[in-house]
Image (tube, rainbow, N blue to C red; front, top):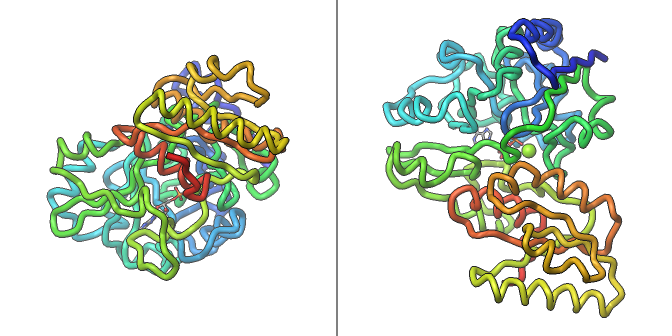
Length: 350
Ligand code: AMP
Ligand code: MG
């Protein structure tokens, strides 16, 4: 297995170390690599056999499609067709960046990538390691988040080494990822943007470029069995620690504090071992309680950056319950609440 350390880039020539990783992709191997959102588990997106290895390594359901990552706009023409003006406008505004757009796929894209759909998700990442890797590979790189399916996504190598290192041919360490939640996934239907997965690019930002988007109701709502969805990923368990989690949220901050307090006391009375994931001021407020506290930070950017590491850390205490403080769904809060609701299996106290 190849290990490439790019945690300390001093010079643009350091990116040449990625040539060997590009070769591994070309030859059908699997590479763990950083993007600005989360780490990806990448393979040649035009090679059916290579892509199958991703599904196997993650234990991912074969109907849950993968995003193709491109290094430049020329690659887009290879894989997608019938692109509308509004779609180009969105790509221009948010690429390179944490933004994925679902487009009609060309035949060259194997159906294993698209989970049998006639569309493909495409993203141009804003991370020099990721884009240089794709350039060296010379092909679009299919890459889901680097984690075993259902588990929190990987945002640094340490968190995912144990679960994935024996399943890949190359690991690229680029340090902790900048954003921490995955890309915003959209699809344009009849000129209207639908948000299928919220991410760093917010409703507010999309509104400025392409009018008010529709946030798919499954972004915050639980899916009933058998419901038809626009994005297969909505159907599956996601981001979940092994420990049971419960989310607590109220828009009134004082009530929210009381609810957290009541929840802690209720479970302490039953002698439960508790972890509390909360914002900085509450980490201080609840410090004398008999709970293990994980401070999620005090800004949405900070919470987002650490969210998956915090969930993994919370899990490591082998507690009976993880109590998690929620946030407002404004801006980046929508992506954070989408991840937390799913980590908690929609178990929320309001
Ligand atoms: P991940 O691979 O973990 O970043 O998740 C990618 C998300 O994008 C999943 O929820 C997929 O279901 C979704 N996705 C990828 N390609 C498509 C597509 N062609 N149509 C709808 N959703 C897609
Ligand atoms: Mg994922």
